[in-house]
Image 1 (cartoon, helix red, strand yellow):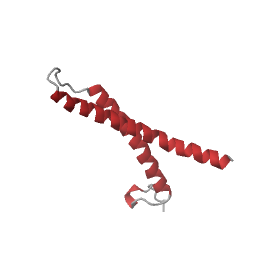
Image 2 (cartoon, rainbow, N blue to C red):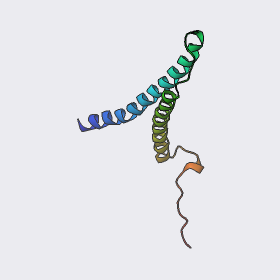
Image 3 (cartoon, rainbow, N blue to C red):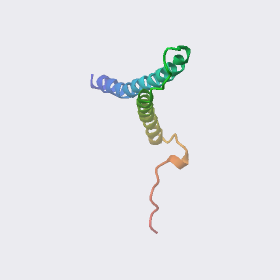
Image 4 (cartoon, one colour):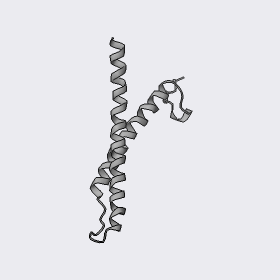
Length: 94
């Protein structure tokens, strides 16, 4: 039972940043779409909502950065990365 619970927690640790990244992407998309959609309405002056876009970008970057970092360190542990990304070992003093 402990193994199932620990795997469930591990999945949640990866799903939550993914959902945060999705929400950030949707915020950026909404801000951009609302700006371009306002050009069709002559009653309003189109203005870009920078705060929504920047918050969305930050959420997107944090979510993608977390998932990318997790994949990178997992691959580094299993020696799947290129030699330039492997951990540097100090040279032995001779």
